Length: 138
Image (cartoon, rainbow, N blue to C red; front, side, top):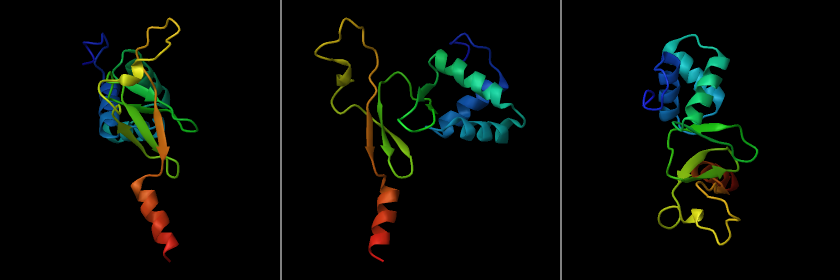
């Protein structure tokens, strides 16, 4: 995968890919901590550099819902969307509502060649709903 993207295979790159694959939608601090647990000492800057390189070549996708830190995921190239909990910030993947990326077809593209659409659904996750409902019944 790294070689196909013309990147050298290094321990930090492999560790970052594994960390993001294991913990999708993680922020950089979570990724750094996960990488350190697997390979030991690694600098913040090294992880930031790897995240930038992997995002640039399309092996990772960087998302940043309004009011959130940047998050990373390995699910790339399918133009999926996200649902974000307003209470705890949990993020889940959401496939396009109808067919193959209908959100890429617009009535007026202003001459742009559109290759990605970013849709974010906002709401309250099941865990927060359950917590909120249990507090109301007390």
